[in-house]
Image (cartoon, rainbow, N blue to C red; front, side, top):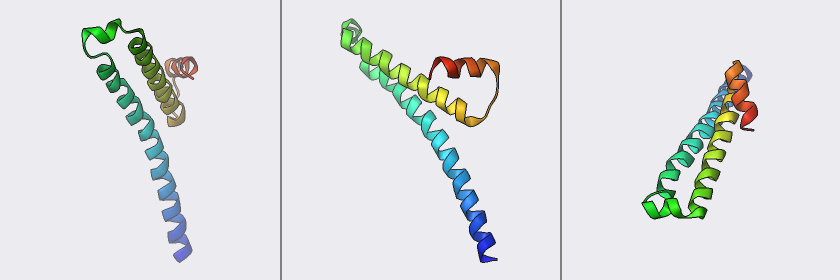
Length: 88
């Protein structure tokens, strides 16, 4: 009985941790996208090549995290597969 309860708890914990990892990918992607606003704040920042490069880099990282989330979520769709392949 104790062993059954342990196995049930272990499976539940594993399931929750898997979901936490997927949620982490989305939260990190949202944070990166939101941080682009602070990089690009003000008109002078848009003229700065380093700020533009940093913004593009952050968006690319966010797209990769979203692709990783979609790949590990188990959802199968042709459009999603194309997105995942593009943003690896």
